[in-house]
Amino acid sequence: MSTAHPRASAWHLRGAGGAELWIDADGYLADGPVAGAVAVDCGGATLEPGRVCAHTHLYSGLASFGMPPPVKRPEHFIEILERIWWRLDRVLDAPALVAGARWAVAEALLAGTTTLIDHHESPNLIAGSLDLLAEVFDELGARGALCYGATERNGGLAEGRAGLAECARFVRANRRPRVRGLVGLHAAFTVSDTLIEEAAALASELAVPVHVHVAEGVADVQHARALGYRGPLERLRTLGALPPGSLAIHGVHLTPQQVASAPHIWWVQNPRSNQGNGVGYPHGLVGAEGRVALGTDGYPAQMDAELAELRELDDDPAVGPRRLAAGRALISELFDEDISGLTPGAVADVVARDPDGRARHVWVAGAQVVRDGALLTGDLGALRADAEAQAIRLWDRMAVMEEME
Ligand SMILES: [Zn+2]
Image (cartoon, rainbow, N blue to C red):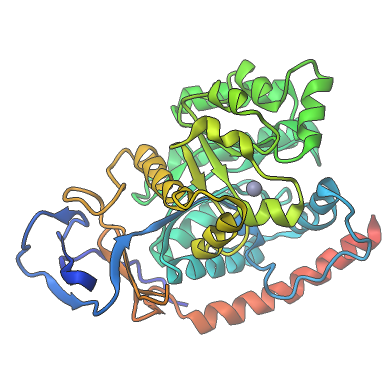
């Protein structure tokens, strides 16, 4: 397994239509020639900014390796969570988590997705889990933001606090330049007011935003209403857990007015997941246009596939490019650097994309991670073999858990 961390060097890229980019040795786009730059003729490939997957779950990275369906077929969204994803997250151990994350991050880079914002849960492996993921980002050379999605659904408040403690530990210790730590909550309907208030206090103390699922299914709305709130968005805001810059995921069951009432947060739409789970289309997100990014919610980070689903669902041809631009604005804010495009001074997260959509070359902060469609920072065959071996072990453990329930 390669653990060679990619290094930045100076580059001179020539792409389709006579486009030229200069990248300095610190990994920033320059406004003219850079001494010692390595020349790369990208042929007919278009030079574009690296894509951002603004919400995903790397813990499901092994799912594409033959995860068997549950014996009792889920009938609705909550049963999909209970019978598939909440079983998978409980059987995760370190080797399986790392193998799945490596595979998913490698797939992302090969698709020209340079940033992944992950929302992690592994209830039987909480402490240290974010370091395991961060090391994968470092090793493969991807950019990312990580959090543990604190929840009380297995072990009550103690479990929730362990999740927040992992976020706090990681944020305080993290020194990785391409990785950020956030405070995470799973969703309002799996946490108490006490935990939400503790998450709010922690985010304030650490000066980081909160990453949380909001109004993905109607159950989240009903739960908040039963507690006397208008909905989960209002509950989280009232308790202080959506500070400026926070990431609210899905927002399916909200009106444009509700969405507009929280102007300083980011929203992330996940079209394939919303369709797959049958939860509906997030029409209310028009209330936050310009601050709605695109995520894959655990699907492979091929943003082309997510854009294709979006085109099926939304008549506005500009919506896809707007979502991608919002993702870049979001990470520019998270990293406090200009990662918004290909202008001089911006961080050089660059993809040379062939006319057929494939990513030919990929750079993250000036370090090349994909060349001629091949991963430079890891042995893809070894990553696949490891993922296959860990997947077999994981499906056995899930089957045992299902029998015990
Ligand atoms: Zn999600």
